[in-house]
Image 1 (cartoon, rainbow, N blue to C red):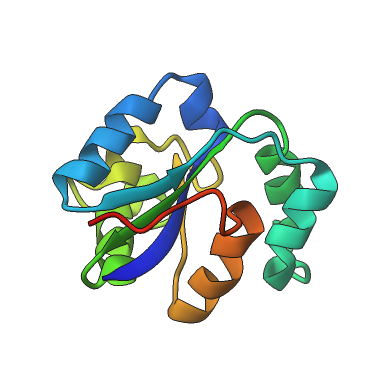
Image 2: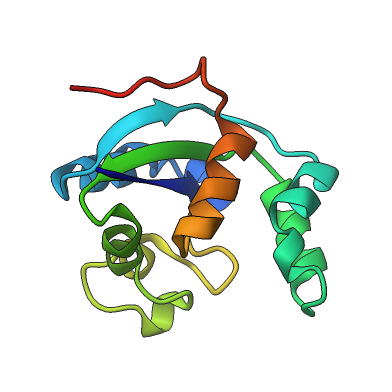
Length: 140
């Protein structure tokens, strides 16, 4: 089973959508290996999104991601990274396919309800950002 990371973003947490999003993830065959609520500092958000530091949206993104609680979730299933990307939908909820998380729960490009690792390399970097070896266990 492949592992990936998703984050229920501050807007979705504030709107009490975490349970619905988690239920959708589990219904799609994802196994939750780790889950917690965090409040990123601006510096934490900047470190997490460092690959976007040269982009014009970086300041807004990191400010938003540090604006309230978020819920990182370590997930596993076969082909987890691509399966999560497909379930999330396009970054812009207005362009996301029907039935995707972002289409159902997103507000705009920034407040699009969920983040997800986009490659094995990003998953390998993002998972230990939020979870150490004591905070999750493989499930049988």
